[in-house]
Image 1 (tube, one colour):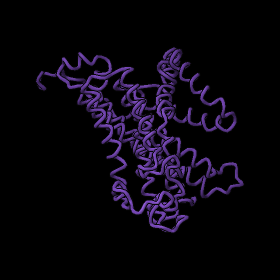
Image 2: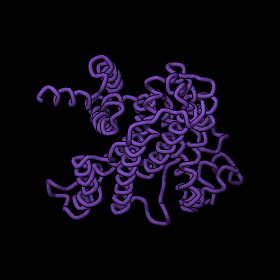
Image 3: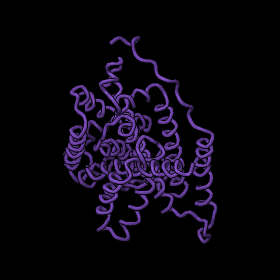
Image 4: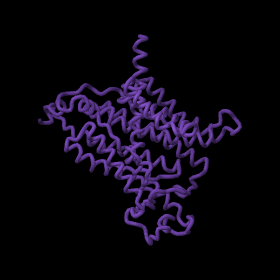
Length: 370
């Protein structure tokens, strides 16, 4: 059907309500002003001091929240359940990890220009895929382009073949598992099962200082808030309306003149790029990246965050990432053997009793009071 015969959509919604802008402003102040003051200016003896562990934990969870937001775009608003987003997260992390490894220079254990693991494996020169790793500008570009490129190739063939539903989820799970096995191999030149670690500098500055940790924290918080506004603008615009129409009735959307493959591929690539940025922000804060980040369990966790918070709400997946991520941080210390059982029980309980997640529950409770 020709483009001019497509049905007209209602005008887009405002970006945020007044209450939404107020909440956004509070979050911006908390990230840019409150947390740095509590960490750097308040003495450690004070009850209001935010310790380095707390800064690192919140920074990691904000990276998770970006992934949950990306998952909400493809699952909540487009109806595509991906169980392979951990791959895109890890690819962004590996790109940043390669840059950080080059920043070590001759301060490694072997005093070589090559990363230590290459010297240990008797490599004589950098492999071809490391050639741009000494450039920060190239790294920033590749953090987006590598996961987006992988997503484009995979999505192009998957969507054109009309693979959907549980079959698409299984294939994405197989994709990330295959990538994990590939990255475990030493001959790929990506550190094998140990991955990359022992980072020392970023942009020539020491990475393990309180001010650098706080700078990475603030940068991650700004990225999360920026991606939230971007996602909100995206789903409120005509593009987002078409995505929701494809989710609810793909054949009808096609009959009305819209090409589902083009729309699904676009949001799929955008979502992968967001996960790549999250991975790049995650690595310098945790100090390591290895193939374990591509494990199927990590991709399932991203789906759990979105399900617990509430799909197709944008705010819900972010809240789910904080809730589940915080619970994981506590349970893996207090009762590590029960963490996976807790995660599985939580996903089953939400699926059976809270299909709209916590945000859906709050909306129902608020509706009953009126």
